[in-house]
Amino acid sequence: MTNRRDFFKTTSMVVAGSMIGANLLTAAEPKKMKKKKIGLQLYSLRDDMTKDAAGTLKKAAAMGYYSLETASYGDGKVYGMLPGEFKKHVDGLGMKLTSCHLGGPNYTKETHAAAMEWWKTAIEDHKKMGMKYMIKPGMKFPEKLDELKVQMDYFNAIGELTAASGMQFGWHNHNHEFTKIEDKVILDFMLENTNPKTVIFEMDVYWVMKGGCSPIEYMKKYPKRFQLLHIKDEKEIGESGLLDFKTIFEEGYSIGIKDYFVEVERYNFEPLVSVQKSYDFLAAASYVK
View 1 (tube, rainbow, N blue to C red):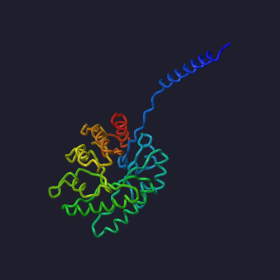
View 2: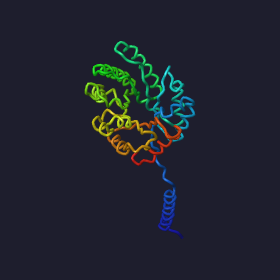
View 3: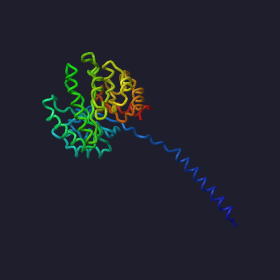
View 4: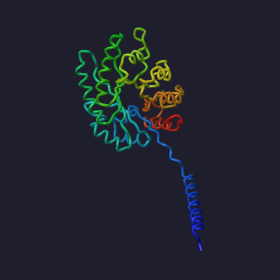
């Protein structure tokens, strides 16, 4: 006859054996890698987006891209779609709309009221898509600092409107910002004359390098102002060897940057192939979260 002590001893052995077997099965299963939330500036696929926006977005999702930054806004539409329609399409592919590039009207003090009305409409449209950031990527640079100050006052006004809607307005640099007006580096003047509470900066690391400066040094100098990165190279990411992406990412994470976007402007291959190769480079990099 089996007593209670023998029964529990036998049962414990069976359970232990089952647990060991389960652990062995688990150990044998391949570990699932956490998907990196790599972003894509859709200007990288500008021609493809013009021809077939829906199909191109599907291909970007299949590559593994998660976060998107748009570069098309006009007549209340994004890539030919109404804001709600575009968002629904992106959401359906498992991607997220995070940021946008948009130019806005040419600005003077005399056109202030009209310019603000344009931005109010743009803000409303992009809020419908759940955007976090609205980034201005260019303007006609003046030749005097007092004229540049007028433009920065304009930026501050846009920033207040954008912040009131729960988004952030910012500036995307190229290399011209590292030249001087009246012996003052343009980008430094812009950083020093915009409200840090309402105006952010998206650092394009490639253009900083082409401007003769260091992305790392600028992040260290203005750690609270840069909240987005454009990860860019001569062509595909990692292709030229000109940029130390490991150090760039490490410094970016250290100052709290959470969102970044691949941008490929020139290609060794067809754009879709170059964009895929750029994703693969970052996906394989141990320093990219």
